[in-house]
Length: 174
Image 1 (cartoon, rainbow, N blue to C red):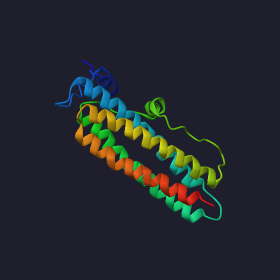
Image 2 (image 1 turned 120 degrees about the vertical axis):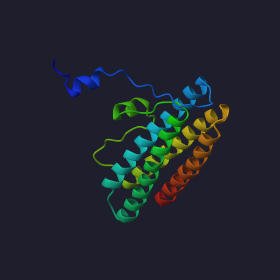
Image 3 (image 1 turned 90 degrees about the vertical axis):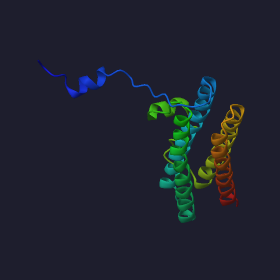
Image 4 (image 1 turned 120 degrees about the horizontal axis):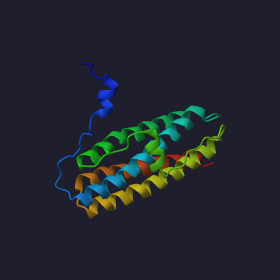
């Protein structure tokens, strides 16, 4: 009798149910998960763009901008795990791959080989303002379904996002 290979055994396994007990309705789980997955995709996209600009900034204010963007990238990355875990806590499933992020993100990528520092700051300021809008939308969904913990997390992220926008605005003033 031959044993199936590990790879064959893994592929033959039925999908394990990821049902997390929650007192939220199925509609609440669906709506909150959708809203938060959209935010999560945008946060990943904005994180990568912020790090891209951090790596490629140049010019007379290099050090200040480089450090600012590194700090902002860290702050964005710190949002990802609590966002994904909130989705799982309410019974949903979260993003699974870079492709999944790409299909859900609303923040546009920037693949240009060169972007001026002023354009970097302006683009990131606009993207953070967009993220704040998306966070407010997700907050409304959480409130509608009485997800108090989700709304509470989002309130702090809105404040952080507004702070990033403010810093980018002030750093880009002439």
